[in-house]
Image (tube, rainbow, N blue to C red):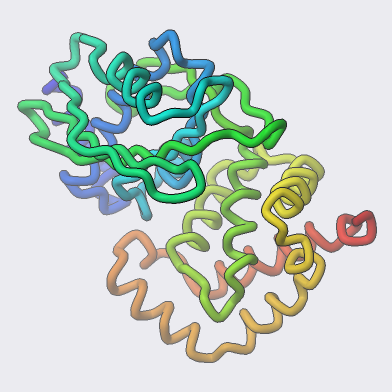
Length: 281
């Protein structure tokens, strides 16, 4: 797939977006991992979630990092089983010249494991991915099979993840939970870009319902109800605009996003929550 990788690196749209060679290489390895999951007999049991899936779907890699979140469904949740499943997936031989190897596995907290994996290919070198595996709560969120098309060769993949409304709700709830004082621009920018690029597929009512479900499950319903407090602080913290300028200098993807863009996203999402959502809680 050397030709496909080089072609993507030379594409004009990637130059405009500022996608570096390192970023393209990382996207390639992520896609090859996801391709193996889509072909695996464990496809149904592995629910893909988090920033990486949101970035890949939005075709914008502004906050693409080295993590891939996987929720394990309908399986005995032990370290041994996790390693067996991942060895089965990662050991799959495809004609893409990529080899995956598990380097370390560590227990974090509350039934969360982190598995450090290295994907190797002669054209992209060695790329490290941290696979974070968690156990799905009973009837937590509904995951369905979704399709994704590779940016390299239009290869189609089918894997299980949450719908767009739930993905945005999970990320947006994490923003509201920490409050405006501890706001992560990475999280807010990802939400903004995800909504901007996929907003046409996101239904307001489904987003409301997903946000309510996420907040109830995580015990943050009080913060959602007091949404106006977050909104006021977001507008009133003057230092935040200065912090945004610093962030833009550090993240080249953010240069085309104005602070007003973020304000509008926060305000519009707040309006979605309030009318008629809050009155129904």
